[in-house]
Image (cartoon, rainbow, N blue to C red; front, top):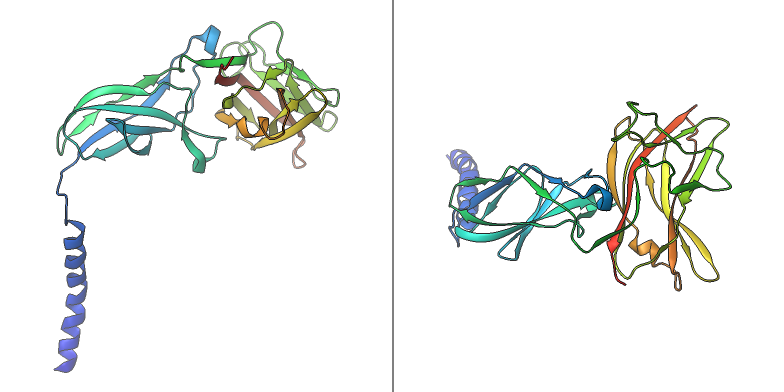
Length: 294
């Protein structure tokens, strides 16, 4: 009999625990949420002033009546414990330096703002939304390889050179041309930098670029003062297995790492990976984006 009682207790214990947990879970606010869904966010640009509309918006950072609700990966579907008319703001988010753990609301994109009506237990489907660059955004460097010349120079140490993909080539990302570097056993080292030096601003600075590479590639900055030069690698881009990728590289910390630096260039460089006979590096749509402070 004692064994039967023990068995019954053991059988009913999970049920009792579930009921206890359930009671605790549903204590307090009994509000039924409304839901919002967003499929994706695309970018529009003034091409001559802001460059390509290529983007990699991965998230939205959501504010309801200026109260932060959370960051949600796209496509997003999330609850809101409000009903009636509210002002909602969706700030487009990206992966800073291409790293999932460093997702940020991208300060250079305009947040999407709407007045919406929420209903309990009902989903508001907003579909595809659009954004563009903030009006104060400043682009000291744009390079899309569509002009006769280009604004990237190989350094004196570089053995490989920068070519352009031929018109109509399937290697081209968009437009007529992309930048193209080939590494082999003879041309086994590549290094380039922007032709122009740019003033280090008193604000954040991002480098945007599209790339497609079968070789690792280092991206960094060269900073200048009146008497010194410093070359700082920031990120190593990994092979993309034939796929084009868009990345947002934060230059801010590296530009301010040394006291007295006043200007900078962006540089890229790499040796041919040892396990490859030849490597191809493709890039396009370089942008330096910052806020104009003077």
